[in-house]
Length: 286
Image (tube, rainbow, N blue to C red; front, side, top):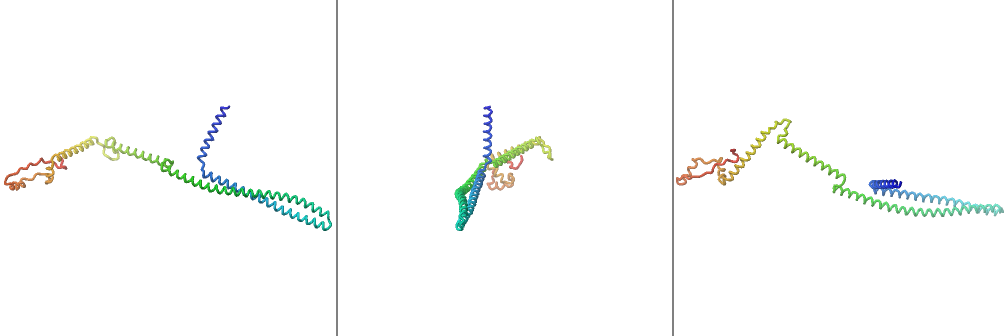
């Protein structure tokens, strides 16, 4: 039985802790302050109604006192008139009634003083409560403004740091978009490689892929690069002479008829000029 009571106590404690945590998340300090202010206004209104009720009772007692005082004055006047008329018995009766009325007047005066004191106390309490309510209202608005500013600052900082729920969702969406983009790029590159290798063919009107022809095309391209490389090596080995030959028409040697004047200018002796081997031009295919 003791063990069962201990378990029930722990369950109750856990339940209260969970409920307190949930309520703490749901609680808004601004709403709590507004509710407290509303409660204080209701209390102040009750105090004011109490003051009004006491003042009403005091006024009623005051009216009764005036009425009793008038009765007392009337009985006193009647007693005097009866005594003047020689009716001592009638004067005695009037004086006896006056004594009873004076007793009532004394009670009413006591009630009046008590109600007047209560009214003064309630009025003072109402004034103090009004001052507290006004001070609480100013403090409430200050706390609410401070809390709102702090809340806005926190949200802005969470957005800047990317730890807010909204920005976390945006970040995850961006990451998923980038991952899908990279995946599509990788897929497109893989398909291009497969089509280039002949593993895949264009089924929408393209010609069937010929792997033999593709290999021959690659070999032809490789040979063209080799020939151009050999030609560049030969041009570099020729030095400045190939540049002079390249300046002549078509890179060809001058004919013999054009070389004759040069022989006469040298005293009839024929000068022999050794030309380097004719090199093919860069655009010429060997």
